[in-house]
Image (tube, rainbow, N blue to C red):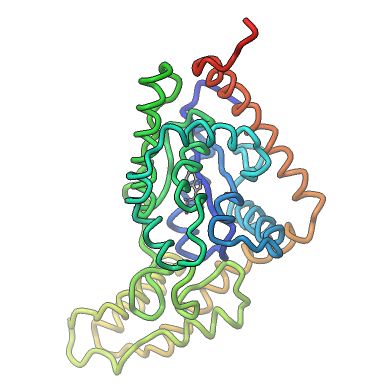
Length: 335
Ligand code: TRP
């Protein structure tokens, strides 16, 4: 891959279905990044083992995430789209970094405390060192930019600390990875029940998944919370109504939005019609992505090709980094 370009790295765990929030918050921006950066996009199957030790559905989930990424516009020829466990060098670097990570800081990590609370019977060491593995993913490619949401900022800060310690002790090998900020391109995708954002695990009926059938999309949108409508002109919109308009701005055409905005201002709006419009526009938006992902998912040969092509690109960068790492750490005894 072109070494002149800055390096971008990100990962997604294969533990849930991609939803509209992932699309507008991440995927859509990754598609832009792949044009101007050297991008490594990874399916974090090893991280999934920290919370999902049962691997019965792992293969299917990994395939689905890869297929959905491609359906959203990730081009496996441009970016390296790969599976974490295919790169054994990650595990080696993770081991070395574990010696630079302190129990105190790992125990203080917010995600660790949250997950420990959720699975008190399985507080395994992998859960504790989750941020160390994530740091290994990133610095294995000597990446500088990591496009992730707010919930990952602490992990990135920890990655920078591990890098500083490594560089200080063994020599300047790694750049400090930073969060890639999309600024204005980072749109919020509100959930359909008027509370918060669409998310992987909370209220499934309020989240639109890229795999939802047309019928399910319609059903979910029609269930969105509304009320009797504004009683006087120029009433400010309650949050749950503003959310419906916000969703329309993502997928509907400007005329439709203008029509309903005016109807709202004039108190003639019919929320049933508003939701019908949104439902149809959502179906038009989501169904081609769903169908494309389904086709890819059923093409096992293509999936294998994509994963081996991605692994090859990722391994090339990993092998080069690990040679520098072993040398810097004094683990090369033959010369
Ligand atoms: N921890 C990330 C998440 O839960 C997934 C992830 C794994 C990741 N490795 C990564 C993200 C490397 C960015 C870079 O979303």
